[in-house]
Each structure stands twice: as structure tokens, then as C-alpha cells.
Length: 170
Image (cartoon, rainbow, N blue to C red; front, side):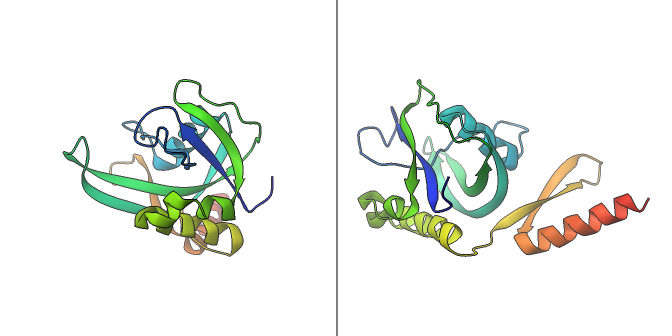
């Protein structure tokens, strides 16, 4: 698949139903699920595409967003596909396809809605330039539970390399 394409869906129900908007696959992270695992799971559930988490490109925070009561964090993530054949989740997705990034960015919805314009612009920068987001560094909490630190992708690579080198020398 060409680098300058994104995986997009049209939903059968919800806010975007019948709005002729192609959007990125989205979903909810399950309780106890790490962001990097949840985004890959949601992409596979909605589109059949198996993908690996690469980095967190940005996130958005809003209040009273969910059922007009809860605060909401929306994470824009980059993934690398391991498969390209789309199999739509029939219960939620009307259609899914690979779309050239410029076509995605130029949709009227993305041009006329500020937050979507920002997010689409970040996607375009990632596809066409060397935009770096946040990558994961696996670590443990003070009680020994697995955890992830999200930091600049270059720094994450150096931290992961240092950890790998330290563990291989033991």
C-alpha cells in the first residue's frame, strides 16, 4: 500500500451516519487495556486490518463529551498494517477503504470543522513528512505492574535501545 494513504470508514450509525464523511476508525479502549493495544484491536474489529501500533501522533481532551457528563480523551495514532485486505464489521461499518491522504484532508467536513482539520493536517504531515509523535517505552510501576511511558519517538527509540542493551548484557 502506498505510504500516502489512510484507512477510512463510513459508519452505519451514530453521529456520522448519512453525513458522507470518511473518518478514521475509532473506538473505546477497554478497562485495563493499553492504548497501543486498544487502537490496533479497534482497527481490526472495524476493518479486518491487522496493524501494529507505531506512535501516538496527538490527543484531544474535551469535557462533558460522553453522555454530556464525562471528560473524553481522543488519541490520534499511527499504525503499520500487516494486512491490506479490508473486511468491514457489518454491524457498525457501512464501508471501509484506503484513501489518498490529500483526498482525506480535503473532505469538506475536515476543512470546515477546526478539530478535524487539525487532526487531518497531522495525518498528512505524518504521511508526507517526518512528523514524530509519541512512541511507547515499556516500563513497570512502583508495584511492578507493566506500564507504558509515551514520549517523543526519537527519545523512545534511545530509551528502548538502552534498556535492550542493558538486559542483553546481564
